[in-house]
Image 1 (tube, rainbow, N blue to C red):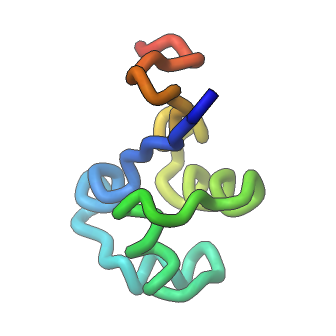
Image 2: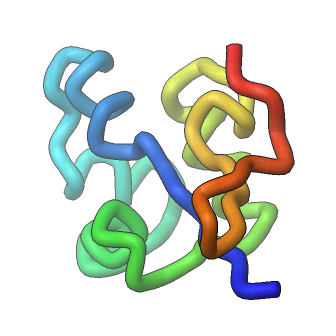
Image 3: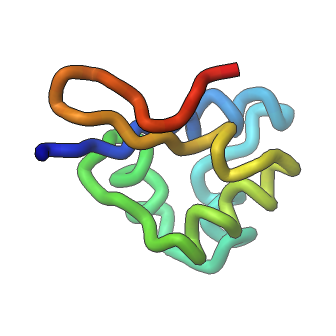
Length: 79
């Protein structure tokens, strides 16, 4: 089964007073390029990094990241 991780990192950055990619990167201990790659979907973060990103926004990891298969079906119920 082909699965993709979809994220709402960019949406949450802007909900947090238009936090920049650089500011988020510093908060979670990665490079700005890593944040760019995560937002574009070309890099899937580790569980630890996903948790740090969610914590930086003050939300649950499920609010930022979700797993979908190739047909767009999600394993995680949407709120």
